Amino acid sequence: MSSINLRKVAVVGCGFVGSASAFALMQAGLFSEMVLIDADREKAEGEALDISHGMPLAKPMKIYAGGYDDISDAAIIVVTAGANQKPGETRLDLVRKNAAIFKSIMPEISKRKYKGVILVVANPVDILTYIAAKYSGLPSKRVIGSGTVLDTARLKYLLSEHLSVDSRSIHAYIIGEHGDSEFAAWSSANVSGVPLYDFCKMRGHTNFEEATRRIESDVRNSAYEIIRRKHATYYGIAMSVKRICEAVIRDEKSVLAVSSVMDDVYGVEDVALSMPAIVGKDGIEDLIPVRLSVDEQRKLRESAQVLKEAVRSVI
Image 1 (spheres, rainbow, N blue to C red):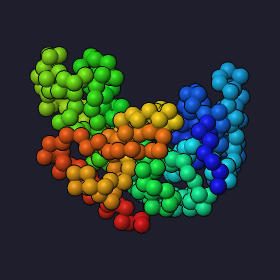
Image 2 (cartoon, rainbow, N blue to C red):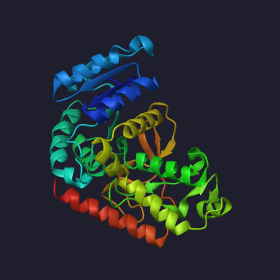
Image 3 (cartoon, rainbow, N blue to C red):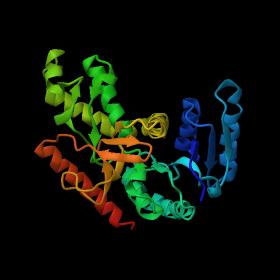
Image 4 (cartoon, helix red, strand yellow):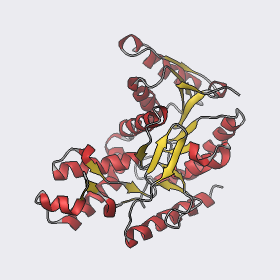
């Protein structure tokens, strides 16, 4: 068993999302070593060469294609391996295909007695995060799904456009499934401490319910719209991967809407979904059960039920 090298990351899966994530991580300068793994070894080699040739223009980094023996000392293993979501296909449609792939990957990680953090990015991310937690042998806090980090970023972006305010000053979350049953936790949303409803009135917006419904719908359908236009989404999720890795490597204790296995949060347990969580060097330190209305609590339980039923079909 190797000790963890905090300057090393592994990316498993070199499709659109994996290669974009590798590029984003290289640009971030968080790591000095990156191993790329793919079922198609030549694809991994090609991506490694392509990024490596730009090293004279960036920060020094060793990037190479490898195998599972190369992951044992990585601080973070980013798992993007899986089939792509096709136009008209929901994330849950991917369950069976990608669950089988994960059931082959996780034992490879487990047998090497891995001590770092697994970041699950492939879809459906909540179900695959649950499978990763069960099959990897790692404590569940060290298995993180990218969850609704990107959906939350989309929410903040759309709210910032609507309100003409810096998106970084908006504190609002998309929670639940990263998929069709996700929803915005409007009850706890605020702009620099000012409740969202009050801030909307201050900015001259009085059609609060109509606007929030439209924005929430736009967030939920964002991936479908991007896939319809360009057949895949990868830049936004790559930036989310970079952000989560930053929080882990720098032990930032940042609050991010990542996916993890729930332990009785608003009555939800034994299922992975997204809630704001404190993310640091050991993965998830604590979940933050943000204030939810009775209706939002119902939506959370319904979202959990959708995921539980999907998990039962593959475990």
